[in-house]
Image 1 (cartoon, rainbow, N blue to C red):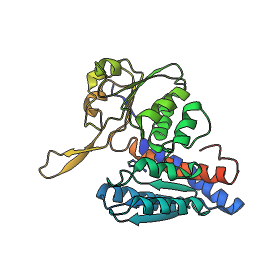
Image 2: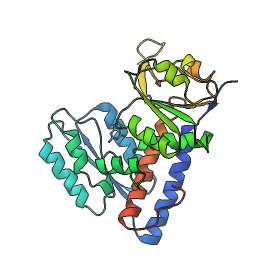
Image 3: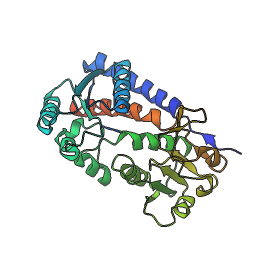
Image 4: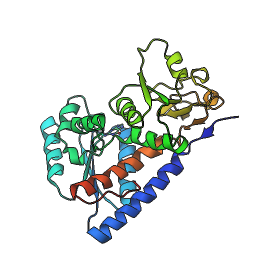
Length: 296
Ligand code: GUN
Protein backbone atom coordinates (compact mmCIF):
# COMPACT_ATOMS: atom_id res chain seq x y z
CA UNK A 1 0.00 0.00 0.00
CA UNK A 2 1.47 3.40 -0.88
CA UNK A 3 2.39 5.74 1.97
CA UNK A 4 0.04 8.26 3.52
CA UNK A 5 0.77 11.71 2.07
CA UNK A 6 1.43 14.36 4.70
CA UNK A 7 -0.38 17.46 3.47
CA UNK A 8 1.84 20.41 4.40
CA UNK A 9 -0.35 22.84 2.48
CA UNK A 10 -3.36 21.99 4.62
CA UNK A 11 -1.34 21.96 7.87
CA UNK A 12 0.14 25.37 7.00
CA UNK A 13 -3.29 26.80 6.19
CA UNK A 14 -4.62 25.58 9.56
CA UNK A 15 -1.65 27.08 11.41
CA UNK A 16 -2.08 30.40 9.56
CA UNK A 17 -5.78 30.39 10.56
CA UNK A 18 -4.79 30.02 14.22
CA UNK A 19 -2.11 32.73 13.83
CA UNK A 20 -4.67 35.10 12.25
CA UNK A 21 -7.12 34.52 15.12
CA UNK A 22 -4.38 35.16 17.68
CA UNK A 23 -3.40 38.38 15.88
CA UNK A 24 -7.02 39.58 15.77
CA UNK A 25 -7.26 38.92 19.50
CA UNK A 26 -4.03 40.83 20.25
CA UNK A 27 -5.18 43.79 18.14
CA UNK A 28 -8.64 44.07 19.71
CA UNK A 29 -7.86 43.07 23.32
CA UNK A 30 -4.32 44.38 23.76
CA UNK A 31 -4.02 47.04 21.04
CA UNK A 32 -0.91 45.15 19.91
CA UNK A 33 -0.36 44.52 16.20
CA UNK A 34 2.65 42.22 15.71
CA UNK A 35 5.13 43.47 13.08
CA UNK A 36 7.69 41.56 11.02
CA UNK A 37 10.65 43.26 9.31
CA UNK A 38 12.31 41.43 6.43
CA UNK A 39 15.68 42.61 5.13
CA UNK A 40 16.81 41.65 1.62
CA UNK A 41 20.30 42.60 0.48
CA UNK A 42 20.92 42.32 -3.26
CA UNK A 43 18.63 41.10 -6.01
CA UNK A 44 18.79 37.30 -5.96
CA UNK A 45 15.56 36.34 -7.81
CA UNK A 46 14.72 33.34 -5.56
CA UNK A 47 15.15 35.45 -2.39
CA UNK A 48 13.05 38.18 -4.01
CA UNK A 49 10.16 35.71 -4.45
CA UNK A 50 10.46 34.46 -0.83
CA UNK A 51 10.49 38.00 0.55
CA UNK A 52 7.45 39.04 -1.49
CA UNK A 53 5.53 35.95 -0.29
CA UNK A 54 6.50 36.59 3.31
CA UNK A 55 5.28 40.20 3.14
CA UNK A 56 1.99 39.21 1.48
CA UNK A 57 1.19 36.49 3.99
CA UNK A 58 2.23 38.65 6.96
CA UNK A 59 -0.29 41.31 5.94
CA UNK A 60 -2.95 38.66 5.14
CA UNK A 61 -2.62 37.37 8.73
CA UNK A 62 -3.31 40.88 10.07
CA UNK A 63 0.25 41.82 11.00
CA UNK A 64 2.41 44.71 9.89
CA UNK A 65 5.11 44.01 7.34
CA UNK A 66 8.23 46.14 6.95
CA UNK A 67 10.33 45.39 3.88
CA UNK A 68 13.89 46.72 3.62
CA UNK A 69 15.64 46.24 0.30
CA UNK A 70 19.31 47.18 0.21
CA UNK A 71 21.66 47.14 -2.79
CA UNK A 72 24.11 44.25 -3.25
CA UNK A 73 26.93 46.75 -2.55
CA UNK A 74 25.69 47.43 1.03
CA UNK A 75 28.49 47.56 3.60
CA UNK A 76 28.59 45.62 6.87
CA UNK A 77 28.28 48.90 8.80
CA UNK A 78 25.16 49.93 6.86
CA UNK A 79 23.48 46.57 7.40
CA UNK A 80 24.36 46.54 11.12
CA UNK A 81 22.98 50.09 11.45
CA UNK A 82 19.65 48.94 9.94
CA UNK A 83 19.49 45.91 12.26
CA UNK A 84 20.10 48.15 15.28
CA UNK A 85 17.32 50.52 14.14
CA UNK A 86 14.93 47.57 13.83
CA UNK A 87 16.01 46.27 17.27
CA UNK A 88 15.02 49.64 18.74
CA UNK A 89 11.73 50.01 16.82
CA UNK A 90 8.77 49.08 19.07
CA UNK A 91 6.53 48.37 16.03
CA UNK A 92 8.92 45.59 14.94
CA UNK A 93 8.57 42.34 16.90
CA UNK A 94 10.36 40.05 14.46
CA UNK A 95 13.44 40.61 12.28
CA UNK A 96 14.49 38.32 9.42
CA UNK A 97 17.58 39.00 7.35
CA UNK A 98 17.24 36.91 4.19
CA UNK A 99 20.22 34.58 3.65
CA UNK A 100 22.52 34.11 1.87
CA UNK A 101 24.08 37.58 2.05
CA UNK A 102 26.45 38.96 -0.60
CA UNK A 103 30.02 37.75 -0.05
CA UNK A 104 31.41 41.00 1.44
CA UNK A 105 29.04 40.70 4.42
CA UNK A 106 29.71 38.73 7.61
CA UNK A 107 26.57 36.64 8.17
CA UNK A 108 27.52 35.57 11.69
CA UNK A 109 28.06 39.14 12.88
CA UNK A 110 24.73 40.24 11.37
CA UNK A 111 22.82 37.38 13.05
CA UNK A 112 24.46 38.18 16.40
CA UNK A 113 23.44 41.84 16.05
CA UNK A 114 19.73 40.91 15.97
CA UNK A 115 17.99 41.22 19.35
CA UNK A 116 17.46 37.54 20.37
CA UNK A 117 13.90 38.45 21.42
CA UNK A 118 13.17 39.52 17.82
CA UNK A 119 15.15 36.72 16.14
CA UNK A 120 12.18 34.96 14.46
CA UNK A 121 14.59 32.80 12.41
CA UNK A 122 16.00 31.35 15.63
CA UNK A 123 19.55 31.69 14.28
CA UNK A 124 21.05 33.83 17.09
CA UNK A 125 23.46 31.84 19.29
CA UNK A 126 21.27 32.69 22.31
CA UNK A 127 18.28 30.97 20.70
CA UNK A 128 20.44 28.09 19.44
CA UNK A 129 21.69 27.61 23.01
CA UNK A 130 18.24 27.91 24.54
CA UNK A 131 16.85 25.27 22.17
CA UNK A 132 19.70 22.93 23.07
CA UNK A 133 19.05 23.22 26.84
CA UNK A 134 15.26 23.07 26.52
CA UNK A 135 14.70 26.70 27.58
CA UNK A 136 12.06 28.87 25.85
CA UNK A 137 13.59 29.80 22.48
CA UNK A 138 12.61 31.11 19.10
CA UNK A 139 13.03 27.99 16.95
CA UNK A 140 14.10 27.94 13.25
CA UNK A 141 11.00 27.84 11.06
CA UNK A 142 11.68 24.95 8.68
CA UNK A 143 12.62 22.35 11.31
CA UNK A 144 9.80 23.55 13.57
CA UNK A 145 7.39 23.04 10.65
CA UNK A 146 8.82 19.53 10.14
CA UNK A 147 8.23 18.73 13.83
CA UNK A 148 4.55 19.74 13.47
CA UNK A 149 4.18 17.48 10.40
CA UNK A 150 5.83 14.56 12.24
CA UNK A 151 3.40 15.02 15.14
CA UNK A 152 0.47 14.80 12.72
CA UNK A 153 1.34 11.20 11.89
CA UNK A 154 3.24 10.22 15.06
CA UNK A 155 1.63 11.93 18.05
CA UNK A 156 3.84 9.87 20.43
CA UNK A 157 7.31 9.71 18.81
CA UNK A 158 9.13 9.01 22.13
CA UNK A 159 11.73 6.26 21.77
CA UNK A 160 11.65 6.13 17.97
CA UNK A 161 14.90 6.34 16.02
CA UNK A 162 15.07 9.57 14.04
CA UNK A 163 17.80 10.02 11.44
CA UNK A 164 18.46 13.52 10.14
CA UNK A 165 20.47 13.56 6.91
CA UNK A 166 22.14 16.99 6.76
CA UNK A 167 23.87 19.07 9.42
CA UNK A 168 23.18 22.68 8.44
CA UNK A 169 22.60 25.35 11.09
CA UNK A 170 19.28 26.26 9.42
CA UNK A 171 17.73 22.77 9.28
CA UNK A 172 19.79 19.70 10.26
CA UNK A 173 21.13 20.72 13.68
CA UNK A 174 17.96 22.40 15.03
CA UNK A 175 15.88 19.49 13.63
CA UNK A 176 17.99 17.06 15.66
CA UNK A 177 17.43 19.19 18.80
CA UNK A 178 13.66 19.24 18.25
CA UNK A 179 13.55 15.46 17.74
CA UNK A 180 15.59 15.03 20.93
CA UNK A 181 13.10 17.25 22.75
CA UNK A 182 10.38 14.88 21.41
CA UNK A 183 12.29 12.04 23.17
CA UNK A 184 13.47 10.40 19.95
CA UNK A 185 16.80 8.62 19.68
CA UNK A 186 18.58 10.89 17.22
CA UNK A 187 21.31 10.29 14.66
CA UNK A 188 22.71 13.12 12.53
CA UNK A 189 24.10 11.75 9.27
CA UNK A 190 25.73 13.75 6.49
CA UNK A 191 27.71 13.56 3.27
CA UNK A 192 30.73 12.07 5.03
CA UNK A 193 28.77 9.39 6.93
CA UNK A 194 30.00 5.89 6.09
CA UNK A 195 27.23 3.69 4.67
CA UNK A 196 24.59 6.43 4.70
CA UNK A 197 21.91 4.09 3.23
CA UNK A 198 22.30 1.70 6.19
CA UNK A 199 21.82 4.56 8.69
CA UNK A 200 18.79 5.80 6.77
CA UNK A 201 17.29 2.28 6.71
CA UNK A 202 17.42 2.15 10.51
CA UNK A 203 15.20 5.24 10.83
CA UNK A 204 11.60 5.22 12.03
CA UNK A 205 11.63 8.94 11.20
CA UNK A 206 13.86 10.02 8.31
CA UNK A 207 14.43 13.72 7.67
CA UNK A 208 16.25 14.50 4.42
CA UNK A 209 17.82 17.96 4.36
CA UNK A 210 20.86 17.72 2.11
CA UNK A 211 19.94 19.78 -0.96
CA UNK A 212 20.70 16.96 -3.43
CA UNK A 213 17.88 16.08 -5.78
CA UNK A 214 16.39 12.62 -5.13
CA UNK A 215 19.44 11.36 -3.23
CA UNK A 216 17.41 9.23 -0.80
CA UNK A 217 16.28 6.14 -2.72
CA UNK A 218 13.42 3.77 -1.99
CA UNK A 219 15.79 1.08 -0.68
CA UNK A 220 17.18 3.55 1.90
CA UNK A 221 13.83 3.56 3.69
CA UNK A 222 12.59 1.24 6.43
CA UNK A 223 9.13 -0.12 5.49
CA UNK A 224 6.49 1.99 7.25
CA UNK A 225 8.86 4.87 8.20
CA UNK A 226 7.80 8.50 8.37
CA UNK A 227 9.78 10.40 5.70
CA UNK A 228 10.14 14.18 5.81
CA UNK A 229 11.64 15.70 2.66
CA UNK A 230 13.06 19.19 3.23
CA UNK A 231 14.66 19.45 -0.23
CA UNK A 232 13.46 21.94 -2.83
CA UNK A 233 15.55 21.34 -5.95
CA UNK A 234 14.83 22.64 -9.43
CA UNK A 235 15.73 20.10 -12.14
CA UNK A 236 15.11 19.92 -15.90
CA UNK A 237 11.62 18.58 -16.71
CA UNK A 238 10.82 16.07 -19.48
CA UNK A 239 9.65 18.91 -21.73
CA UNK A 240 12.63 20.76 -23.21
CA UNK A 241 13.33 24.14 -21.60
CA UNK A 242 11.02 23.46 -18.61
CA UNK A 243 11.99 22.75 -15.00
CA UNK A 244 10.24 21.04 -12.09
CA UNK A 245 10.71 20.88 -8.33
CA UNK A 246 11.91 17.69 -6.68
CA UNK A 247 12.91 16.91 -3.12
CA UNK A 248 15.95 15.19 -1.63
CA UNK A 249 13.94 11.94 -1.70
CA UNK A 250 13.17 9.88 -4.84
CA UNK A 251 9.44 10.22 -4.21
CA UNK A 252 8.07 7.60 -6.67
CA UNK A 253 10.24 4.91 -5.05
CA UNK A 254 9.88 6.11 -1.47
CA UNK A 255 6.08 6.35 -1.53
CA UNK A 256 5.94 2.57 -2.10
CA UNK A 257 7.98 1.82 1.05
CA UNK A 258 7.30 4.57 3.60
CA UNK A 259 4.32 4.64 5.95
CA UNK A 260 3.93 8.42 5.54
CA UNK A 261 5.80 10.93 3.40
CA UNK A 262 5.79 14.65 2.60
CA UNK A 263 5.46 15.47 -1.12
CA UNK A 264 7.50 18.16 -2.91
CA UNK A 265 5.97 20.63 -3.52
CA UNK A 266 3.19 20.82 -0.92
CA UNK A 267 4.98 19.21 2.03
CA UNK A 268 7.51 21.03 4.21
CA UNK A 269 7.70 24.17 2.03
CA UNK A 270 4.38 25.79 2.98
CA UNK A 271 5.08 25.22 6.70
CA UNK A 272 8.12 27.51 6.75
CA UNK A 273 6.28 30.80 6.26
CA UNK A 274 3.42 29.65 8.52
CA UNK A 275 5.98 29.02 11.30
CA UNK A 276 7.61 32.41 10.65
CA UNK A 277 4.24 34.10 11.22
CA UNK A 278 3.75 31.94 14.32
CA UNK A 279 7.18 32.94 15.66
CA UNK A 280 6.37 36.62 15.11
CA UNK A 281 3.21 36.34 17.25
CA UNK A 282 5.12 34.40 19.94
CA UNK A 283 7.90 37.04 19.91
CA UNK A 284 5.36 39.89 20.22
CA UNK A 285 3.64 38.18 23.18
CA UNK A 286 6.94 37.56 24.98
CA UNK A 287 8.15 41.14 24.41
CA UNK A 288 4.91 42.42 25.97
CA UNK A 289 4.87 39.77 28.72
CA UNK A 290 1.51 38.49 27.49
CA UNK A 291 0.48 34.83 27.66
CA UNK A 292 1.32 32.93 24.47
CA UNK A 293 -1.68 31.55 22.56
CA UNK A 294 -1.98 27.90 23.66
CA UNK A 295 -2.72 26.58 20.15
CA UNK A 296 0.42 28.05 18.56
N1 GUN B 1 17.27 31.54 3.26
C1 GUN B 1 16.80 30.29 3.06
N2 GUN B 1 16.08 29.88 4.12
C2 GUN B 1 16.09 30.89 5.01
C3 GUN B 1 15.50 31.07 6.28
O1 GUN B 1 14.82 30.20 6.85
N3 GUN B 1 15.74 32.27 6.87
C4 GUN B 1 16.50 33.23 6.28
N4 GUN B 1 16.69 34.35 6.96
N5 GUN B 1 17.06 33.10 5.11
C5 GUN B 1 16.84 31.93 4.47
